[in-house]
Image 1: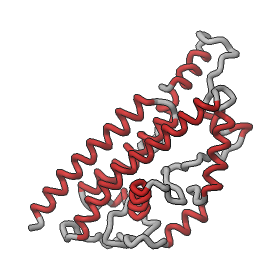
Image 2 (image 1 turned 180 degrees about the horizontal axis):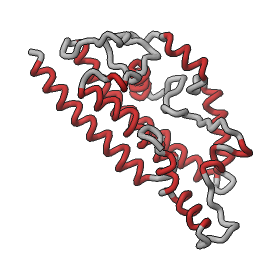
Image 3 (image 1 turned 45 degrees about the vertical axis):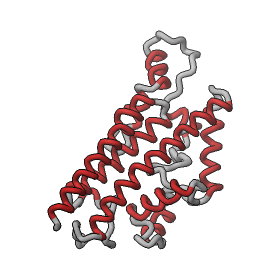
Image 4 (image 1 turned 135 degrees about the vertical axis):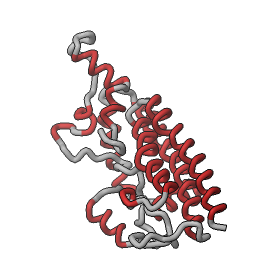
Length: 239
């Protein structure tokens, strides 16, 4: 539950969640496969609830795809773990210390393999790989939209249409300042990041295409359109 992590809603309306509901009500037999959240994320009582992509779906190393790498760098800059020039900041050390993201290919692959093994208890290897790739691809496409929006707002700071708030470390949008967003356009950007991008990729990984599309991807497209319009207004007002 929550704006940035409605996983229960995604799960309960997915095929997995519906099957579990039908099993509970006796419509499906007791031996029917119907995984719960705990089945996939807390096997044998493990409470880590870790995933390969982590909560915010950002990781290292950078992808080989040049466009995706550039988009991810932009997002990392807006998260404040890289400065506007692309250099690591003190926030990156906090992320490392808290183990909030997978920062090596080996760590990412280990978590991916753990989930593959779990999924293959019910599904074929080909299906599992295909479905997980869909999630990866959704992150890539969502990153493209979010990075474009970040660059639009960053350009407003660069060109003087927005002024740097005192609590910002850099003359650049800060996605972790969402409770103190200084402008309407940044409020829209923060919601695009924390609500709609999250729903796009989380809905995909939870096998809920309806959630991923209508509450995630479609909303991100609308966010980007509104951000472009707001940026034009701000530029006209700053002349």
